[in-house]
Amino acid sequence: YALMKDLEGAIGGGQFELHYQPIFSLTDDRQTGYEALLRWKHPERGMIPPDHFIPLAEECGQILELGKWVIERACRDAATMEPALSVAINVSPLQLKSMEIVDVLRRSLERHGLEPKRIEIEITETAGISSAEVIAVLKAMRKLGLSISVDDFGTGYSSLSYLTMLPVNKLKIDRSFVHDLENRHECRALIAGIVHTATSLNLKTVAEGVEDEVQLNLLKMCGCNFAQGYHLGKPRPLSANAGIRHLSK
Ligand code: G
Ligand code: G
Ligand code: MN
Ligand code: NA
Image (cartoon, rainbow, N blue to C red; front, top):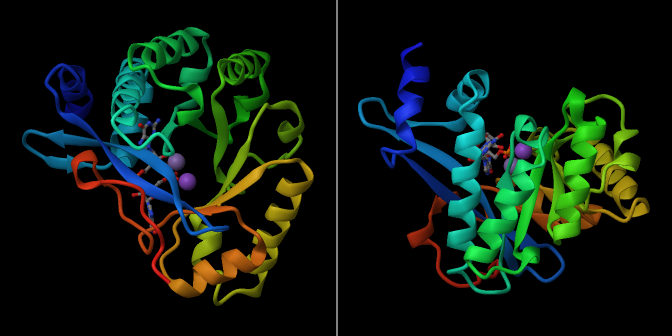
């Protein structure tokens, strides 16, 4: 695996960057923050998407180093944004196995004078998610004042019992459900069900992958709280994002 070898020098070589995709409140159409999305600018192969290199980084253990870089850079960038905006950081399940990530987060927040509520942590539903180690790490993050979201909700782990054990704040509804919202009655029922479940558990919902106005309006009808997607804003480098945006009516 040539790519796996290239990963080793890529952090030091400044080959990674974060792009930011805006997230909006569906209650008042105001932007509430961004999701930070990692990009690898490979010197020979050009832009490599995270779906390709995150699994490699997880396999060779580099994900811990890379994950620290992402946290530090996202906090640095968040400190330059409007104080009303928060930044959501994706973390690999492997980063949640040790308390070290909590220290990394605490130090980055302090270094950049950032209020903890400005940072959200996105975790994915995986088999190990309700292990004692992971629960302890997530609780420590919450104690720091960070918010926790479950990414790709509805596609992963089959048992929902973890929701009663994990200290989470938000569910991010996977874009596959949003994609079929217009054509498939079942998807609308599913999203309404997720929103209902979230509300009963005192959680907020974020819809991902919103690609048109029809989807946006259906999501509002379902009572979804937040949304992101190409229709609302594509992931862009920090320099391209300025100020708080509103959805134009
Ligand atoms: O950026 P893109 O839309 O291609 O993202 C593809 C996948 O890569 C998503 O599932 C996203 O959660 C994941 N991803 C993006 N940035 C990061 C990151 O910084 N860390 C981890 N662990 N995953 C990321
Ligand atoms: O799994 P996660 O939610 O972290 O994945 C985010 C991924 O979704 C990124 O790769 C991002 O580029 C992609 N994405 C963001 N908005 C849209 C959208 O409207 N449509 C599609 N197909 N992908 C999107
Ligand atoms: Mn995500
Ligand atoms: Na997702």
